[in-house]
Amino acid sequence: MLDLEAWNDLIPGVNWTGWKKMLTDADDKEILAAPRLNTQTGRPLASDSFLNRLERTLGRQLRPLPVGRPKKEKSETRERRK
Image (cartoon, rainbow, N blue to C red; front, side, top):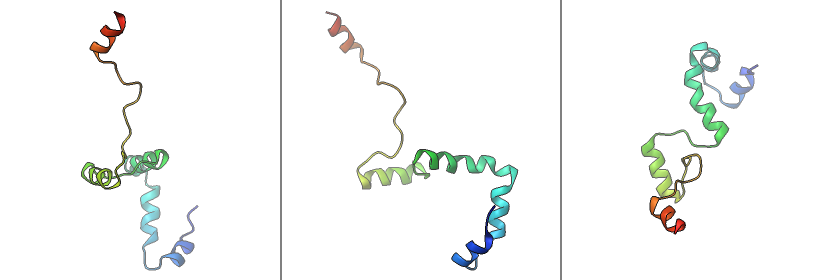
């Protein structure tokens, strides 16, 4: 599945057999869950402090918003009923 010779040609000096073992171990399913989820959603995988800095620097939100429509405030609902 993984062509270690091709990877070794691209980046020589890396222990690719260690990577293969890490990716194929059954215990690594939990470890690989977060990178897979973030890859599927397109969200960065980083700590909260790093995401805060990125959001400030880029001037945009990188974390997902809560799912669903925002809840109405009670005062808005009462005014519309009158």
